Image 1: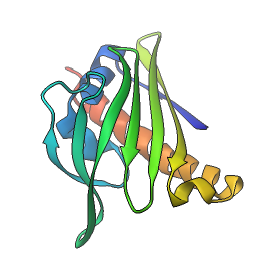
Image 2: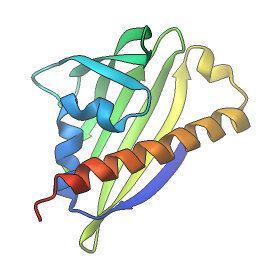
Image 3: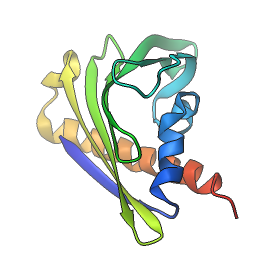
Length: 146
């Protein structure tokens, strides 16, 4: 698992609102191109976001499923993007003064991505999730009432 952290300058509730709105997924998740459907129960365990990944016109339709959810605190997902494979991702929120410490941990768990040498796989996940957390912060902070 590769873990990245970022302090977001808004409350855990404001960050959670972004995570809990599946239609916002492609705004903060690097690689998600569009949302085709968000199951009504999202982010309940077992619910899914049906998304596409890639760059048009080479997009792949797949989904992300909730494996565990502690509202306002954590969300564990299985993100699919075949033929590349699947990853488990956990996002954790911790109040930190007036802000939120956001931690994201990710690892490839099936498919070809599992066989990429650890230093290369870890470095690519780390770089991608720096941008993912930057986007999540911008969306959450931008939705914060002034």
